[in-house]
Length: 123
Image (cartoon, rainbow, N blue to C red; front, top):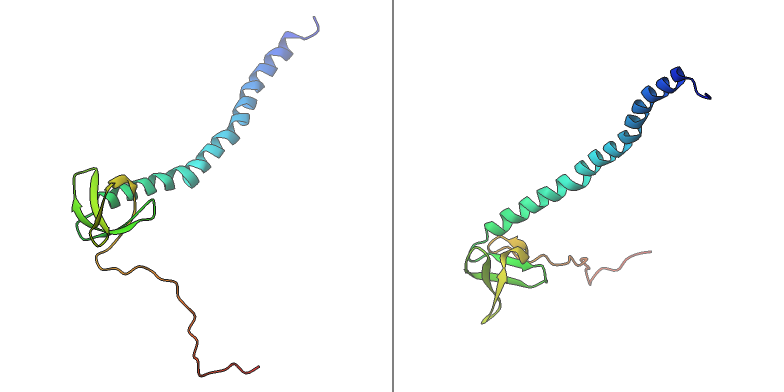
């Protein structure tokens, strides 16, 4: 025999510890991914569901396609109707709403730098 029985038995006991240590990095990577990717995504989904559930008549909504309009009617649990222009009404699935603005909240505009026409810059 080339390998003694005592040497073979000792190697088997160390192999279990070695296997555990080789799986530890994978477990650590999964834990890190859970806290950095999965939990924030779950929170985002819960917030979106809450946002969509609380849509009321008169709210200004932004769809995932980029349309902005004012809610005129909540059809049912799945659909809303909103007006994108005078007399132009659109039905939309609630889940396709990406944002809701409060009643009367103006759209955000780009801030233009203030320039006084009477002043000149001295160099």
